[in-house]
Amino acid sequence: MLRTVILAASRSSRIERLVETAPFSRDVVRRFVAGAQSADALRVTRELVGDGRAVTLDNLGEDTVTPAQATATRDEYVTLLGMLAEAGLTPAAEVSVKLSALGQSFDEQLAYDNARAICAAADAAGTTVTLDMEDHTTTDSTLDILTKLRKDFPSTGAVLQAYLRRTESDCRDLAVAGSRVRLCKGAYSEPESVAYQAAREVDKSYVRCLNILMSGDGYPMLATHDPRLIAIGEDRARWFDRGADRFEFQMLYGIRPEEQARLVGEGYTVRTYVPYGDDWYGYLMRRLAERPANLAFFARAVASRK
Ligand SMILES: Cc1cc2nc3c(=O)[nH]c(=O)nc-3n(C[C@H](O)[C@H](O)[C@H](O)COP(=O)(O)OP(=O)(O)OC[C@H]3O[C@@H](n4cnc5c(N)ncnc54)[C@H](O)[C@@H]3O)c2cc1C
Image 1 (tube, rainbow, N blue to C red):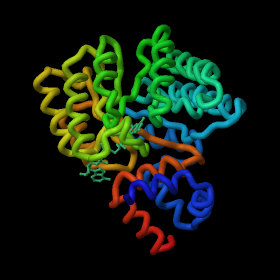
Image 2: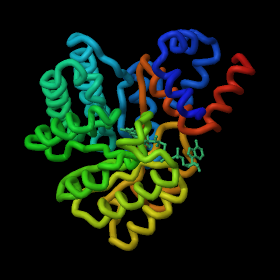
Image 3: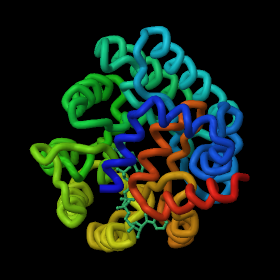
Image 4: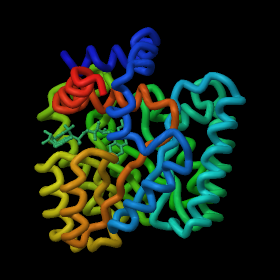
């Protein structure tokens, strides 16, 4: 219920304006977002890589409605990749890209062309790209674009969402040699016709998908903060004899940093997903919807009015 309300708020421009201009927002945002500029992204990446983490950087931005916005996002990624290479932060750092920010909703070819330019820049920088997955109406289009991109850039990563009923089948298709697949629970509000609604069902689906990926030939990227799923991931890594170079854990910046450090200490590869940029509203609202404790954190910040 609370999740539905917050996800609805994430689509309200009135609430967006209210939150963006509120004095407390800066402190809340800082916990989950590296900062507004690529220099902030670089600073946080350097710190995390220094702590033994791998990183994936997300330039925040959704709901792109003009070709000019899409091209600006492409250029931002290309510039960022050049900066990462120059700073010696590749291949530890890669980038995560939302096709919606590259024009997918109004011109699929444009989104493909922009994504291709980013993949070429990543390749030149010695690193990779992962295509974030958005709501279920975009899944087929995103997987089609992924297939095309992989012809020239085979290391381009996909994201599959365990809450979708189709995902077990998608996992089977993508558990092939050279294929990088991030498995997450899924962050959007989806109808029952396409997605499991009960948390228990989503978790069971996650385990089935994890089993397919970990027993397959690809490179699984287990994106979750859930202690039970992380323990199952560790168990399957032992069972399928997957060392630190054959799969990774992924978590979001600002969430369970101690658990991220523990896993690094255990010798696992841990990649932190680091968002940066001005357009943080939708991202922050999805984080709040996921976990009441994040909402309490937000409420405390409101109360203290720092
Ligand atoms: C690297 C990464 C990339 C992602 N990319 C996408 C994407 O492309 N598309 C998409 O739809 N979604 C994406 N997501 C979001 C994902 O789908 C989930 O919405 C999000 O990760 C929350 O699910 P969870 O597996 O962490 O479990 P949850 O159900 O949120 O949490 C499970 C348990 O984890 C523990 N936990 C969670 N948060 C905390 C915390 N702050 N402190 C302490 N314990 C905590 C608690 O025990 C909690 O009960 C991504 C997530 C990650 C980590």
